Image: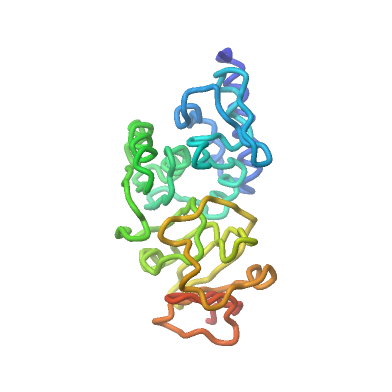
Length: 279
């Protein structure tokens, strides 16, 4: 096992890397990545670390191996991993969680990034985590017990009601977000999710609610396992190509506005537009 000093040094450097990846000058983000022990949210070591779609097992159960930008298997048979730290740091920098906010974390796995989010909304903020895999939800509840402002719901977040939220943070590939997610956003609320409008496209999408609609901004590439309940192409009547996916600027419920010539992706309940919000 690592000497305490070596592990502490590795955690500090890991946190510095995450702060850089976040492109944020918020010192709380660095502190959160240094404080939350990743080894408490993965199975007992040795661990399987993914490299180019293959798993490589660590030589021993030394937690120092976990403090790098690596996918660590939670359930290798199902391809479920503890997500890439650089990507999550970048997402957190983009959505900037603030003290007192309420976050819904969808696809929380065993709760590692839930714990980090819970520190970022202290004091007075809360994180409600949703996990559809019953065993992962059970583990998340156990792992998050020390984080009193975090709770776990075992179930399908595409069907369960979401509370009024400042941030909805989705860690599963979504073809079209449910209307219930958009409606749950408070004004200036943010929804970040991996958009999978086709097999060839995996793109982080950041939605923000304003009084006159929902802005949308594509960010970096992102690839997650499909979100059960929100990954079907059955209700899609227009699929974007790569260029179109990168010019999305707003998203519209069809109850508010029907698709027009700016539509780049059209679904039963929603459509994505290349036009920015007016006003």
